[in-house]
Length: 138
Image 1 (cartoon, one colour):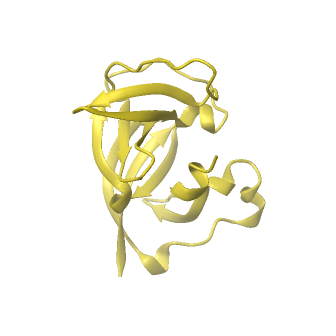
Image 2: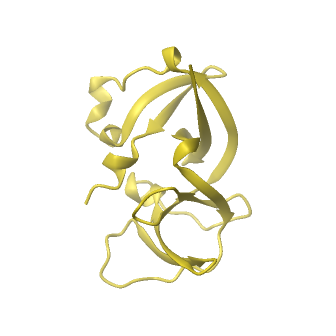
């Protein structure tokens, strides 16, 4: 079997999420700041009458924030929490054979590795696959 993955970049790192978790991918529009929230919560957006919390993955993983540009996207998730992930760019949809998806090496699981469920190689580069449950834990 294979898994469809949406590939995206955060700080030049290639990350992925299962397409089953993706509702829609949007260009960045007005994000409303919310006081007294964790630094990685960029704010709230209103899409088609539904309010979503936006997680800035650069901030979540400890990278320097950058200004949004024409490539910046919000990946709106199919999740009960009504969450969007702010990423530097979305690059492609990739079909990975389940046998090619490997566990995250133990040495990586410290830093931000706890947010990933596996790794896969794509065109000679390592792609980290997000674990949404771990990423969105409170």
